[in-house]
Image (cartoon, rainbow, N blue to C red; front, side):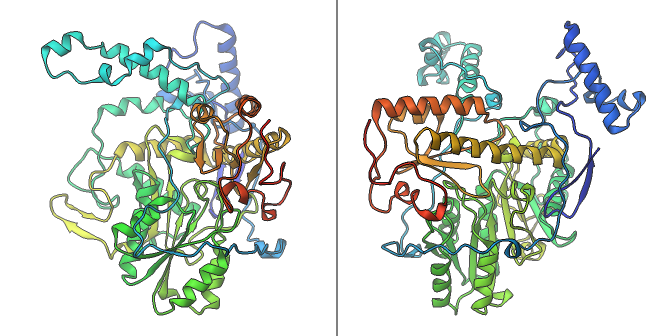
Length: 571
C-alpha cells in the first residue's frame, strides 16, 4: 500500500499501484502460456498489495477481469515512495535569486493602441495516442501519401466523381499510418501520448453534451455532469480551495480557460489594466483584444520570467487603476515559472489592497505538475489568486484537446445569466460543451491516481535533465529551467529535421517538451540526428543582438554554456 499526499492538495490518498490496468478485452492476452502466467502473477500481486480476496477481484465489472492489458500507467520507474505536504517556506531554505533586469531597448508594449499580434505562438501539432514507447515508425510511401492528398480526400458532389473517388477505407488506413509515424517522433509540443482509453470507446456512439453550467442540470439528459463535477472537485482539492468557495468547468483547451479567467477579471475590474510578460501565451493578449482591455506586455528576464522590477514600475505608474495580473506557471517556449510570491510582495509593498487586484494563473502544463514536485513553490487558492487554467490533454493525456478552468465562485456570479431554453444558467465561454472530454479526464484521473501522476512528473523532470545533459555533452547550447521539463536549445539549421521531430521554434532557438511518452531511446536518436545535422549544415548563429539564442548564454541560467554566444562557427 502506498500512502500518497500530493503537495498543495491537503488530501491523503491510500492507493494501490500496478503497472497495468484491467481491461474489458478478453482477447488481448491469449494463446500464450507465458503471457497468461504473467497476467496471473500480476493479478496475484495486485491482490496481495491491495489486500483483496479472490471474490473481490472477480467482480461483475468487465474491466476487472483476469486478463491484463500491457499498457503502462506511467513511463517512470515502478517504485514505492511517500511524499507529504510540509508547510515549508521556500524563503527559509534558499536565498532569493535577484536577476539583473534587461532594460536595454525592451520597452513595455501597450496593447491598448498596438493591435499587432502579441504573445508567444503555439502552433498546432499532429496528435495521436501512438507516440508512446521507443519505436519510431517510418514515414508514408508515395502511394499512401497520395491517398491523403486534397484530390483523394475531396468529398464527391456527383455520381461521376464518386465512381472515381479513392475508397474511404484505404484513405483512413493511410491516415492511421500517417498519425502513427508522426506521433512516434513528437518532441516539440506538450502532449502526453501515453494513454489508453479503450474502455471508453463504447461511449462514442452517444452525443454527450454538457451544455449550460456544470452544477445546474439542464433539460438535456445525455450529459456527463457527474464526471465533470468530479474532475472539478479533484482540481479544487489539488489547488486548495474550500468546498462552496469554488466554481469551474471542463473547457475545450487551455486557451478557453484563459479567456474565461480574464473575462472574470474584466467583469470584476472593468477599468483595470492587464499586466503579463511578453513571453506569455498569445491567448492572454487575445483575451485583452476581445474584451477591449488595456494591457501591457512586460519584458522578461533571460530565463523567461517576468521582469519584476519593470512590473513594479508599471503598476506604480498606474496606481489609480485596478491591477489585473496574469502569472505564468510555465511559459510557452522556455517553461519559465513567474514567482507568484514575489509578485504578491510587489503588490503589498505598493499598498495595493486586495479588492484592487485580480490574479489569473495560466498553468496550461505546469500547474498540473508543480503540486507533485518536491519543495516546489505553492500555487494554490490559499494565496490571494482568483483563477487557474490548465490543459487536460497535456500532462494527463486525452485524444481531444480539453482543459479545466477553476475560479472563486463569487466572481462567476458577475457573468451568470439564467437561460430558460436550457433550464440552466450561462456561465461558460461555450454553449454546447463536449461531454466526452469530461468523461476522458475523469477516467485518466481515476486510473492514474495521485501516485501515477507523481511518477509521470518525476519521469518528465528526470528525462528532461537527461536530454539537457546529453545535448551539452554533444556540444550544443541547451538550457533547462527549474520546475520545467522544457529543454531549450539552439535551432537546428535543417528545417527537414525540425519538421521530422516537430520542434517548436522561436527565431534562433527551438525547444523539446519532455512528456511521459518521451523515452531516453528516442532522445538518443534525436541527439544523434542533431549531430549529423551539425556536421552537414553547421550551427545556428544569433539572429540579432539580444536574440533568444543570445539570452541562452546569460549567467542567470547557471551551469555551463558550450560555446560563447556570437562565436558559433560552421563545421
